Image 1 (cartoon, rainbow, N blue to C red):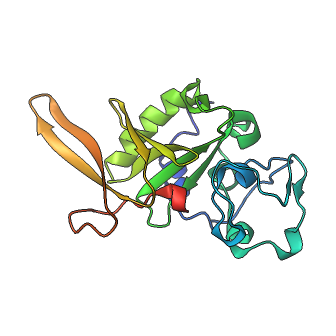
Image 2 (image 1 turned 90 degrees about the vertical axis):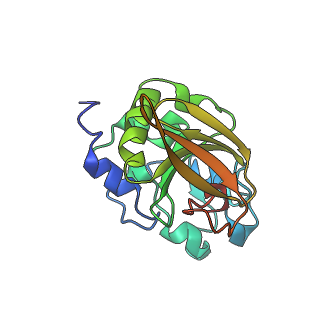
Length: 199
């Protein structure tokens, strides 16, 4: 079953914006309140929101900002995803970027290597190979520190601070090899994959 859910439908769900409709409940998971950046609340990625009661919910739920109101992680919009991928168990939140060109895995800084654990890492590698053929990048964020997951390797990108990314496809004698290069925002060479830490 673990292999069956990982398919085109999963990729399509998660490449959508975070406003895709939820089909399951949070059920006590509040990890997005820690790992996501919420500019309206001046809350940085990787720190608990001051309005969050971990494992319980939002203390200002009725007047929460619109960014929180419309946000749904990939687990909530993908009914095929196994329970082991629920953020409070996996220690990361998966979300599609607003352009559909970036899928971000926001990892709990308390568990910075959780995304490398199995069964997750093998899925991420297969998923990266599927996404990259559609010029979509899979990247992990621990706070503001980013790592691109490519089919053949992982690329440390460091702290991007709002930079854009260029996804290059380079021919080699063994076939195409992809590379990711951070560039200043607005660089005309970029097919923009916006830094998800700013989302």
